[in-house]
Image (cartoon, rainbow, N blue to C red):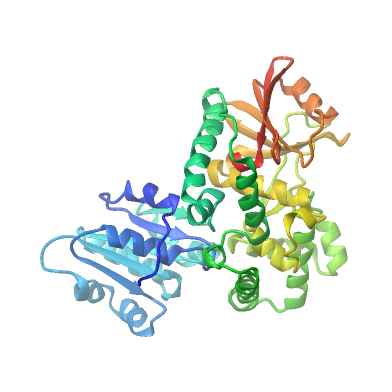
Length: 420
């Protein structure tokens, strides 16, 4: 039996650009499935195609030494060639080689993948301005996770999730929940072990933990520390652990600098590396009132919760954890970030410590999204935001509560976390 490939949402987006000349680039964390996605796309294409693993020195050297002959090796005399180049960042002067191929061969469609966005930014992207469509592939989102676990629930999820998005973008009603406990069972597994494909496919918890620890150790020791030539390896690893313990909290660079006894600039460098290695993202505050609202202090989130839990070596079941609220909020961040990107996403906090977890900007509308682990009434912070900005709609995320209410002139939906 061959390997089972699970469909990724990004595939449909990429297929729309198949007939265009531009190079298709896929970047993202190691072991997130970039190679698998390239192979899935290659499988759907008929005709002349070649899939090249640039981890292999022979192919890498051939591309470096003579990119034109490299293409001729795989191209038929007539017809289009679909050329898939996996791990392009391994190629010396890779961007320059790709530019030569793109400019010299009108009938070659190139697909590339790479793991470090900083590496691609430095050696690949400057040569491909106007020649490249770039896509980010993260680990499995909750929808993709469900497609592995239970296709029937996945179909129901798509219906609920679509109704939520239509409420956010078009004011439609949100569909009521069903099979809540089944959804929550899978969701609680997802926020403990995350979305790395090999982890999702693993059966036992022991196997999941082993795979995650291997990914975490290889990521930090081999990829990040070696590639970026980090000398203070223990400080770097300590920083990752501190960030993991403080996920969803305000990030004080000066406090990190004092605690780790390294410079403020070094903390900034380390955070930049973690950003470009797809380990963390920072979220900045939304503000209009320069006097009473925070303007600069970011919050920190991990892009995969399994990796985050591996950093603190905590794989306890969700119901037994003390960090349930942080996991819930970080999950919502991942899903909002994957759907709307950071340009439309912020948090809100005043100097008086009124706070909204997320503020989504869509079609010039502000939509507050508050995350509540336990069922409570709307707090003072929520009312403060409503009074200040008078949004048309708002979302309260809970584990399992669903209801609709009107607060002043704002339509407020309470929705279960598995709608995201």
